[in-house]
Image (tube, rainbow, N blue to C red; front, side, top):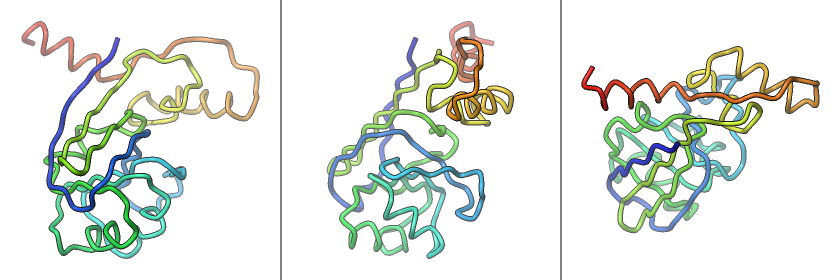
Length: 165
């Protein structure tokens, strides 16, 4: 079962990128676990975000302009970037698979709703809760954990929408 959405914004730096999203609220948070090649999703940036920007394969900004820090760095580094994406940090969740076409300003979001325990997105506390995130972390460290499946919390939203609740 999969959730798909198309978001749009303003092209800031041309190019295409795809990968897993990582929503960052604070660049100094030790729980960020930002990995090279992920797509950085932010409300807005300042110079403290620059190291994360250079590690990313693409950048999505929620509240930005063509002359902001995010825009300037992404153009200099030739990192695909889309800005002014309304509610990006609320709609996109860490672990969502993103396909960006920064030339058109389009973002395709794909979210699996059922995962095997231990899959990369399961480390997201906001989507799966701390128990699942901790179990996934144990699996990545090669601890013996029983196999299982995890259901994304977004399924509740889909259910409510489908049944007009």
